[in-house]
Length: 175
Image (cartoon, rainbow, N blue to C red; front, side):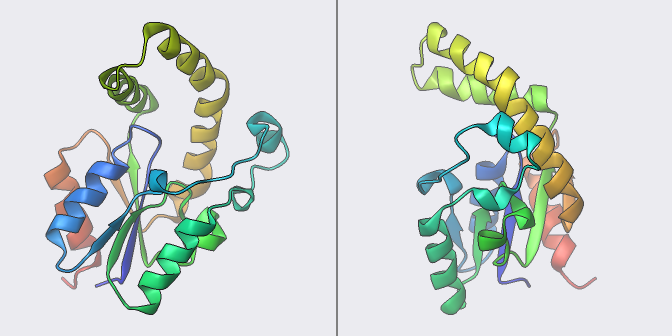
């Protein structure tokens, strides 16, 4: 079994759901969530995209440190890795990368639904949708272009979580 499993998808694609489910299924696994760590991203994402979209420009020292500590202690870990192996600092800790192939409109619907559950106003949702359309969607398309081909397993983002978990476990288990 791999020591660490990275899970990648767009926001709303199912990363957290799969990480939690695998954490419950794999004995002794620690779960690590990307959003629990401060991340410094390029200040102008559209310029970043036009200049080659190097995911190594995204920085999260605390995420890298947590993954390094867990690796040093040989603790099995399942973590959100939206940048996959395209992000060298955290990608080096991925032994098995899963990409959840969720259609972007479905991921967006889940993302908006989650925001509405957080009592986000309709005006705030409108602003977020404008940002999604102009900035985030192109970033997620770039994520798919760079991260998905490097995945050890691509799962259907419309399938049930149980199916994802079974596919992941089968994906690295000897047959």
